[in-house]
Image (cartoon, rainbow, N blue to C red; front, side):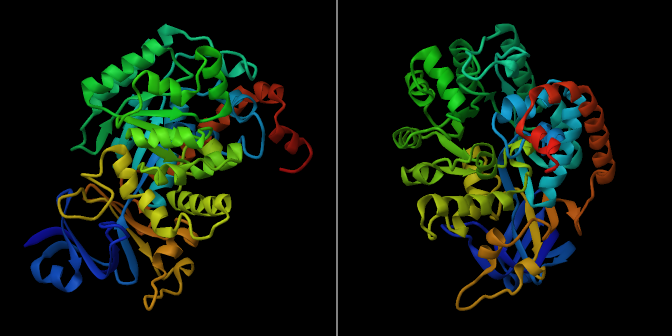
Length: 475
């Protein structure tokens, strides 16, 4: 049988079964936008020929990473709020007040390029003005599961003092909700199914119960997930207790949100009991190791969530928090931080880390029938990594195999040479084939130059830790 692409002679990590499903001399046949066959090279080459042959000798072939939680529009302010307290109010808010929609779109494209070049093929993007940002995914050819971030916060909400109760503006909430509905009705299952949409309430503390309840009803109408920050910080818990007399998890339980539609992001401030309750409810969890580690110095309870029977995965979050959107970085962060938290080197092993960025992430997002593993009938989202790079050398296969540990603890992302998304080669020899990568970077830099001029006085007025470091000659 003739197929479009035939990848042969590689170490193929299928992510099927309980582990990584390694086939040491494996092949993948791709026809159209789907995987036709996976198996030993000798077997596949007997049954298939192809228009395009890719020799994967000394390469790791695996499903592309699924970044389950990313705010790509914030890439334009990467690196402005690390190593500091009051991350939101003093770090990113002085910049965010001056961001335009065009700025966020240009920053987003750089984030997507960064992710693809480190092996991400599916971006679960959760940001404002997503009908504009989604154009990037259409043009570059990445897979995206997108949500408009909906809240009722007025434009000056970032100026509030810590502990001051938010005021809600229903008109703002309605405008953002309508953007989410428009996103779903215009873009869900477009680009041959490569773009899908879900609902994105920003958090239980950032909108009225009335709007939150309306979004729950819409999730049932559209048969959609609710991508939502839950117990993401002490500020959220403080807001919930002041407004409702309840912490976030108890509030969501009381109002019927703890079920398999809910994707709970972070759970940073969740107690063990709350974590168990969310896991038992069927709701899922996304852990952003780098972001929460850098912003808060905290390790969220993903292991506790898994031990309680839940399904959880990894996301990269936003560049001004995490600083990068590289799922290999997330795997390493998650594994090491949890070993330190538990004082146990055996927990959060490399296989769990890789599955948390592939098949488990697809399960959390409700797309595991299409992506996350290499299996006939699934979408052809495949990456190839160079095992002859120093970070993977030496390759040892017996009596133990070191490829997956080296992927998690040694690789940095540049080892990804080829990215196939929906059956199309989007990156070849580390060059993006679908857009002008350098032009996108130049446009984002120019947007950032203009934005920093507009934000200059607000940055000085914030008097942040990073500004003091600058004044002291540390940066």
